[in-house]
Image (cartoon, rainbow, N blue to C red; front, side, top):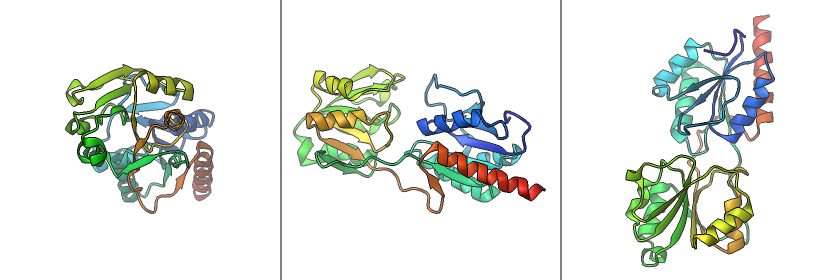
Length: 267
């Protein structure tokens, strides 16, 4: 249930640094009753002092029911830029329940002049390039694979490469490519440590999602420094017509404007 009996109740779909920053602001805003929802991917997440729920809603219908049952006044979708299914569910559920929706999403990374990026539309296409592209099919690479521990299985089709996989929690062994080294670690990481890691493991290619933000950007800076090419997985197409901001401060301003409008309607 929401953290208090306040009339203005907000659901934050979290799991990102932007969601954490927003929750820190909301912890200092007692006039807004906030619930943070996490998917439960990370086993030991850093939790705010707000009300927290962990796990899925049961699709669009489950989320719609939850919004109505809990009297949610507004929803902030601050999920990962690649959590396209959850964002689509949020857009549909909010449309059905007429709940105001805001997308909080950090900007994507931009290629610099000294970078050497190759692009893939999704994980499947990235794995296919590694398996079939003349550039890599017959030239085994030592790959720093940073797509997340739950999205490794597509790369099993390119077993000629060696993969370095860093993760907070151990990945499912069944999902791993045959030649994989697992490194359990939690960031943040700086450019010097990332460069040393890539040198120590002889990395010749970095594979990354275009997640944006500063937390994992040092790996791209290290690749640039070492002249290591990057296979960049582009973001999925965003839900159209959903208002979007880039910072927690902008999200707070949006929430406070909706809270003020809600108060005026009740007077």
